[in-house]
View (cartoon, rainbow, N blue to C red):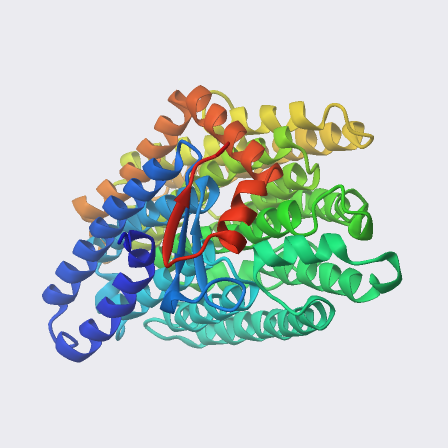
Length: 513
């Protein structure tokens, strides 16, 4: 019996209380177990992704209860790819937290970090909407603890704002679940796909309400305009490694939209037809504009990066809203790119913060290790702004190509190209002020020079930048895989038949069989 698919959830769930109960006063032991756990997650998620690469869909039924009555975990190409991306990101973030000693500045960092991974990975693997809600709450609680790590009034205020907005999303989520359960009698995604398709035209009101509410919930998680207000303060005030880990959090919302609106409320479903291009696409374009204008207008480096996350999510949502195989494939490629680029930028911001008086975009004495930090910022900024030759440029080309045949093509092209120019200007302004103009400003005679960042911290940021470069070099192979993944998403017959019809505790099915 193969139980590997549940290990990415169980492993951090076991490590977190162990760290609290057995190693709370021994930071070295906490670090060792935390790093070992993340390395194990990478190995396991790599195996799961390899297994799913040929179209195999893995089903795990906890307690040997078949769907839709039992809790099921499902591993296909999309979910296993997101699990692998999260695990790789977690390793670099964890190494940076150790190298910069952020994990020593508060209590229970490593335990909360593991609980956060449990919530994120569970959200990607669950096959049930209610358990998606449960994992959302797990990652919300853990993320709040990580946000206020090491304290501070501003951080606490931003954390409260973050929790309030997300609790609003959780409340809407419960309303949506109640509506859809009242209409269909199930919350299993595969079973919902079957039952929603069977709902007659006389009983579609509840389904429409549920579809709109779910879209609003996932839009809050993805920081989509006009529901994005919680993100700039929350991400800019969070500790550097925490903000870097949060780069995957908005992708949970994007993942949920892709999963639910390609399988349950698919584009051909008459009940929800037009929801994507009528509401999602305009909101995505507005998010893209807000994010990139925020990059240009930001007066602090951390808020600049936070607004770039909003812009990148707008770009992802533009591709998703097209609801085509080409659009979803482009969105998935861009999700990997934006996650790595945003995480690298947040860690670079923390490098700057450790060697500078503040993050205000005014000329100040040069940061410690300015040359290396500036080089890393230059590469990450090029990637996030979408300049050639890195993966951001390739991702935008894919999105533009996917939108070419749509009615909104002119708007999509105009906004993406103009916002990219704005982002270039904003990042160039920030880089020149922090790294170039700072060279002409000298320290006062009695000033205490800041310490240079550690080698491990630089290695963690360099690892993320190297992943970005690899994502660019293997762009052809990655996009081919994303295209196959999109085809599987738009033909969910195997997924549905595996979850609903296959008896037994653990089973796998291969695409086309």
